[in-house]
Length: 216
Image 1 (tube, rainbow, N blue to C red):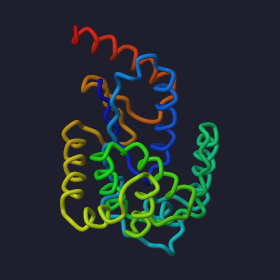
Image 2 (cartoon, helix red, strand yellow; image 1 turned 30 degrees about the vertical axis):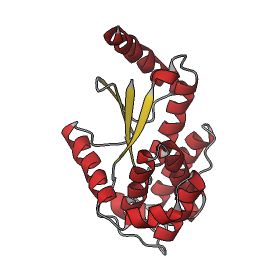
Image 3 (tube, rainbow, N blue to C red; image 1 turned 180 degrees about the vertical axis):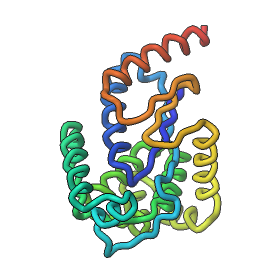
Image 4 (cartoon, rainbow, N blue to C red; image 1 turned 180 degrees about the horizontal axis):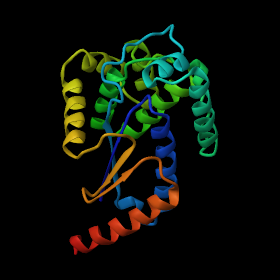
């Protein structure tokens, strides 16, 4: 049974949703029959990388909010993240375009390392003060996940991974996905947002029961 997850690297609720989904999957008795694929989604396709910008100022400008309102939002997300074992450090986040990060993810998926690279990218962006639009940093992240540095450099210099990112974006649009995280289970059920783990568990049980019947 396949589960496709559309999300962005620069999305704190995608990080929280990942943790909650993984908690449900780890407790699911039939997890060996589940295949997870991470799909690319860009919250801001036109994002300009700005290593000098603060995330607070950037979000205030983009969302039309005051700096204080943004800080309140960050406090709420930080609290929710802490409950899932995530250490958000919004003050150190490097405002960056995530297209290259998604290109690395596309390569990792081909090598069976999609989940590991996704985890490393989220950690790098939200907790390690790393510019995920920097090719050298992406090579390091990929190496840490088990990819070859030479292959990463070569792959990111081609159009192939970026075409795959574009394919995921078009697929999301065709499915009516406008916000992330978004979980598609067996192309039958869609779950929007970072829901609590028990809701993922219920969806997994229902979808698996139907999937199993189809296999018989």
